[in-house]
Length: 177
Image (cartoon, rainbow, N blue to C red):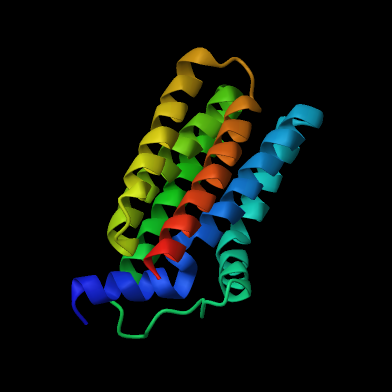
């Protein structure tokens, strides 16, 4: 399977990744709302456990949208997707440690890590929109360090951004087919 065919297989299986981005946006938004209405610790738990649901819910949404939710076994890009997941665990560790001394840095750190992961998705799916999404999230994270005194704000920004981009990604993928 050549690179272009591998990207097409990933796009076809997961609707360009849009359903996963949407699910991630819901998790971010939920964590931001919980942070606004409850405690930082509860918000982090919502973020952590909700994050575990992103991939399976993204697959389910892909299937609802009449896609397989499963790439071909021989697709080499599946390894890149899995390997980039380890960035999230590194980010969670760093963000959790920061939570102990600078709680308001939790979401900016996570949005930086996730923005960086989306840059990789441009190669996985062959969609340049992921560069834009990654850049917007990275800039939001940088802004979160310097411009925000509220714990919840970057959670809300991340959620709204991802939900908007999920619809753009789905639209792009629908237009291609």
